[in-house]
Image 1: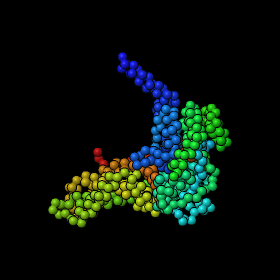
Image 2: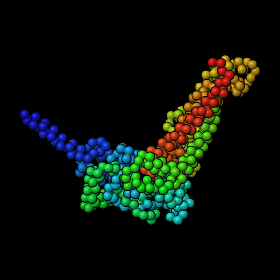
Image 3: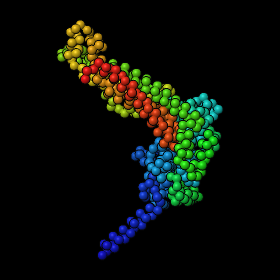
Image 4: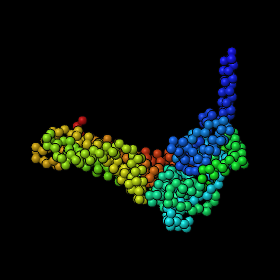
Length: 246
Length: 254
């Protein structure tokens, strides 16, 4: 008898757990799959074990924990990561995505949680200012706002788009490009990792980062907004960002 | 143009649009807006340029490697030339290494390590593809040369032709006919492999399609457009090869 009761209780608990998780409709029940390009420190990168780590995975871990979901990264090149939610392959794109009017056709943005500016990274001592960028070769990652800004300001012929920022920075060290246009916080992380680089700010419009939830998933979007707001208000996000920028 | 702006605004506002309107907007922004077709055109030209260069290099390398290796393999017993054996060893290493490593890895090594200071990504790509193709082509050609019966060579030599002439007038023409389908295969693979050079910064057709897709956040039209162009190029290639094959078969009695 005891065993049966214990079994019944256990069953109830399991069912109630799965019921809580099934509240949100996601690509795979109980999981929050996010597309990401993990070469974007400090927002996301991979550790030696291949796990995706950084500011955004940390934030997601807290939010998904509260919502009863398991966060699962879907690592892919950035331009493909952007369209993964609308292709039904992910529940959201979480990869340092700038809120942009044109992108709203493809995804619903949560409230923004951090602000950055485009920066320009180059080899220390190189003659690079915002005024002579038009004569240089600028490396970017395909699909980023860095690519859009660089192409719009300096033309297709002065821009080389790589699959990953890590590749672009390799090309910069080789001297195959003169500089890299990248979000300043990410640029700073690379400058810290690779000796002999420096960064200047472009002085362009500041950009806001948010999560891009798959279009039409109102419940998930609202839940994320509420959770994000809580984390912003109690300073958790600020401390996570500080921790990763140390 | 006005239609495009109006319909695009309707689509982003979430208003109901007909399938034709959606097709028009997506097609327009993928190929026509801001003269984007020019990007594709430049991409196709680069693709063809790289293919032609790599093809030429691959065939030259392939023929040299195949002839040397066949000459080595077809020596009489007990009359081995040590120099030929040495060169044959080196060529064997070349074929093994190139066939044993992925194209993408070779491109990364050539683009980011060996030619680390070069900015001519298209040439680096063509060189890598050519060296890669050379290894495969050499094996195809070697197969062709080996398939021609030893008696053909002996007959030629006994009629007073020297080794080079026998090769040129007797063995090679027969070999070419035999390997043409396999060679055509290799050329087609080469044409499509040019799409890989975008990883080291070569601005070919796929690079153009990716740029446009990243601009519009709409991958379907640019990628399908690129796929159709590749398909047309391959079909054109196949057609030319068929003509060539038919010509060579004109005197066949089978």
